[in-house]
Length: 330
Image (cartoon, rainbow, N blue to C red; front, side):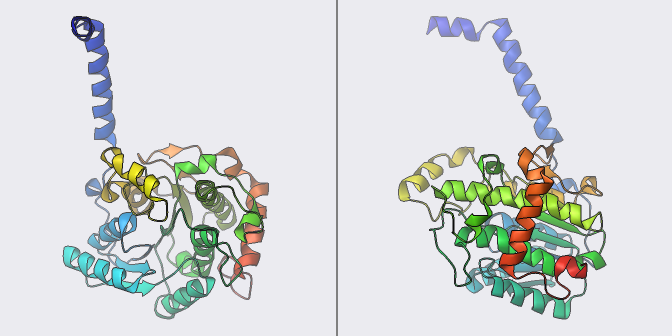
């Protein structure tokens, strides 16, 4: 104990501790915060998928507070209604609405897009937030693997179907919520249909998040600056993302909850990409949880891989009919 006290009282140790504390304080002070951003979204329309809980709900709440016409795209009617009432009550914004969307179903995605476009010709912000992890290996009625359909193909199809509305609102933004777990992902388009099966649910999740970044960079190349699109890592956030894992995995996750971000904190980097003036004109990039530009896995920016992914996603989602490819651009 005396030896420990001696070390702790050493001036070098004290100086190092002080320097580290100061560095962490400065970093925290410099970190972007939604409350410091004055952007008003009156007259603009935003869609947030998976907005009934977690990160998505806080992103939608922020956009509604900025007076945006905010569409909550949710799979659950009951939970969506609860989020709708909460956001309307908290913001006083009457232009918050709920529309049902299940990104694992391409039919649901098409129905959502059609109904939205029937009433809206413009879309300023699209946040592809909905996603899941730990889902059992399942082939949907459309012949797609459930996790890859939910996290990758659904957002791919939705974005493409809404591109005309996004282009009409330029400068519009597309925000894809990925994860730092994409660094441990792999790319095999056969996994999209379950033809090739990955060894674990964690590997599946990591690979879907990698495909989110690949989609982002390839879409950026194809849009040629007409609409901006960026991907991000929200941080390690205490949400319901572990609900499909085993009880011991959930227990371990909950035991670490003290060190995790809250959903409100986890929404910060998504909101940053959606509204910050500092992101204006930036596209095809990947941001970390501190709202800083980061370098993604190199293969995520490989044009050949992006092209292969795009062709597979087009084929599997049925994209490519009249007026569908990149919002009508052949």
